[in-house]
Picture (tube, rainbow, N blue to C red):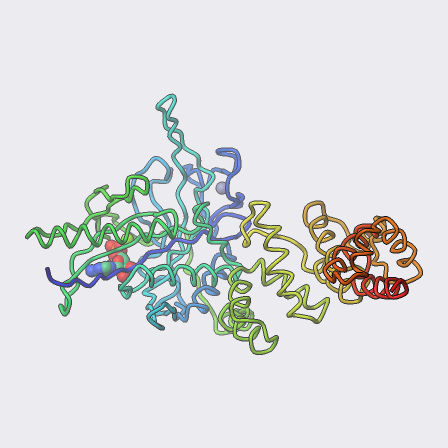
Length: 479
Ligand code: ADP
Ligand code: MG
Ligand code: ZN
């Protein structure tokens, strides 16, 4: 059998995190009771007019600059005409002729090294509604809440050669959008959706093969599997002397195969024409510079700086910069403590564990980093011991509240004063006569046992150093 090379291009839709929809004032929030985020504009009533949400343009320009694109100065919107029950206007407002961003690129890294993936264009458009199929009654209902939610469609060049590159690109895209604050890119909620265009060609052939398109695959894991399956399928067809039909296929993640959904439509089928209801949008030099100046520090730069400036292990820096929620916690706690390494340790071990035990994804954690900072400060200053610190963190994590107040009201301050510790230890020694005499006869390991008993008697609040010192002193007297 010949060797084949796979060629992939992606069309990624990101729902923008604006308060309101792209052409009306309805809420753009995910979910809600069906048909409660709806008005006459987004439900397609005749005679209504769209008003462009200025924020959408801002978010598109931010994304375009972050992805190294040229920004189109004179933007227009076009109508893409098609009838579908979840699209009440029977056309979608999109951008065909003048997309807002073009000719960008994203640098990715895989086990095989670095590569650059070209971005063909990014355009603004509106989302359609949702059909809900009821398996019990066999009826289909329509929910217009998502109609008119703003989308960016990011179209890549056919530059991918492996599933690994696709995953690296999507991860980077998601990171970038989250850092920009323009989209939360949650595949599980549909705020990031990916169409995979895939073809194969014999190794060494210059021309691309015919591609198929797999629509809206719901997770990175499923994308990986769909790519693997479709690659094998196409190679089999070609090896058996057949040819690939350009079509849209759907990936069934449970049954693990793709099947034909419809033959591929092309731009003519949609009878695109400029939308007569919307004015062109011009982007000035000043506006562009303003947006450029407001771009945040992105994951790559942050990761590198955490290692260089704070001395964090690369592994830690990688995890923290992988989610903006963790970056926020880390940076706030560091501002409070000035001890980035301590913060990273607490975050990587204690906080992520609490989050995991609770079943929350790290990217959804909303814990206030300032409180973590306060706890670390109390531990570092010897006000509470590490163990108490951990307990306070768990308490504040689940039930909220102020760590300092909690320590005070629960009387958790560390006891290191020997006049408070020694009487308690004397009682412990009296109650553990056997262990004491064995220790005095030379059994060293009993010392650790007595430390444990003393810590327990002091209800875990004592400074372990002070307990050891007091034990050594009192046992020394008995020798
Ligand atoms: P359409 O608008 O009809 O979906 P485009 O030409 O805009 O088609 O391409 C859509 C996506 O398909 C782009 O991401 C592009 O990179 C990718 N693509 C185009 N040709 C091929 C091919 N032969 N193999 C794999 N991907 C391709
Ligand atoms: Mg397409
Ligand atoms: Zn509306």
